[in-house]
Amino acid sequence: MPKIINSSTHLHSALVLSGGGARAAYQVGVLKAIADIMPESPRNPFGIISGTSAGAINAVALASHADNFRNAVYNIESVWKSFRPHQVYRSDPVGVFSNALRWLSSLVFASRNRSSLLDNDPLAALLARMIRFDNIQDAIDNGYLRAISVTASGYSSGHSVAFFQGSPDISAWKRFQRVGMRTHLKLEHLMASSAIPVVFPAVRINREYFGDGAVRQLAPLSPALHLGARKVLVVGVSGNRSAPQVQRPEDDYPSLAQISGHLMNSIFLDSLEYDIERMERINGMLDVIPEKVRGKTKGAMHPIDSLIISPSQCLDRIASKYLHVLPVSIRMFLHGIGATRSSGSSILSYLLFERRFCQELIALGYHDGIAKAAEIEAFMASD
Image (cartoon, rainbow, N blue to C red; front, side):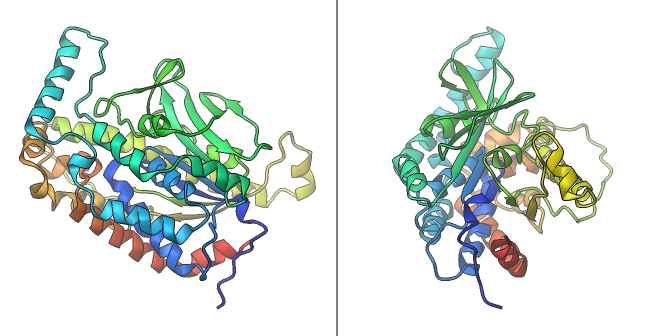
């Protein structure tokens, strides 16, 4: 079967990359599979790219090299494959425990100073070297990209704000607790979008402090649709949606790590799954409504073609194999909150920016992407 991509419709084809800390390495493997499945062309197949949290970092890295999708993917892969914790947050004993003490003191004395469990200044330095933000507007002007959005959560307003940069015909939007704001994306937007609550510090943009974009993100697919998407490829980082959920009896009281992992799963994973389910349900309803009738409604709706790729294996179990490779200071910190138990491994999977874990996730993403090669080709070729 020939690999054909309709060049006239690629600007309305969207890629949605969800959040999930170190789990976002899985997305890199899927992107690599897409690059290998595509024909020998440097063109970016996704005119719209939408990212949240760590997914926003991958999204902006792609957008800044939208003139050559394959090279962009390989550059992102080279960074993830060599990740070490100290490139993302301070992992030395002084950095870890002094930061933790500052955070505890801020709780006791109600201090309003910048505080968090971990210091992610190393990540800011890495992204500043890795991403050329000026290239994004060039990609838009030259037709390689229609729009890119990065979502962050406002701590004062409670709004989920999609900061977007795109074609002049795209309008800003406002819905309940959701706002689309035109801007020129910068490092501060990425740092805000990936600022996991409590773990990493909030970032001030204009007059408000922002944190991780997955928080209160009621409709993760919304930014891509507002930017003009007619079809959406979603790369999630939760488990296989079709796999049965196995409940195991628990005798021990849940640890802080288990509770934190549960909260993180609710923030990063559940809203995307609900939004995908809602989109599929709306598509089913639109299929039985005549097109003439649909066209008469305010803000005429149309079905959205979609393809969902998510891990075929449990990422928590994979993470539990690599606890021993973390620096001693981080292991002590994680042990103290119960993350070294099997029940607490979920939070570990978000913080494990360690090359061996990331390499296994990239390999898994590549395997899952290649397994869906026929579906990916059909998605790319569809009009």
